Length: 135
Image 1 (cartoon, one colour):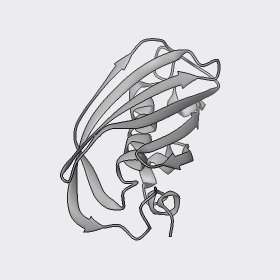
Image 2 (image 1 turned 90 degrees about the horizontal axis):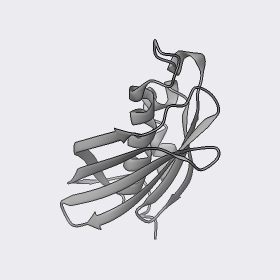
Image 3 (image 1 turned 60 degrees about the vertical axis):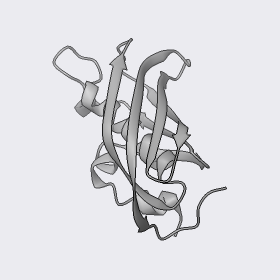
């Protein structure tokens, strides 16, 4: 099993159309095509959809060490609205320890413009995951 296969178990992210496109050691990139069901009452991509995209990238980056890491806190800042096209979330782990991990995620549009930033801290459990750590 790979980390990509493992994260296929995130049924909510799959339902939202989020796909993992790249993984590395403490790194991940995901994308989501904005669909009509992602739009809020104002006609732009709903914040929860963008959060879901960022959260999957966070999960891939922090779980790349093959130890179950679950979010204990996260926040997001929105800068620009989008209503169509693809959004990309690029996650980089900035702190990795036996028990805690911190990850910064940049969400951009197809033109590379910054849409939002996400910061999350995860707690590493003793549970080993069914794939080799990414090195």
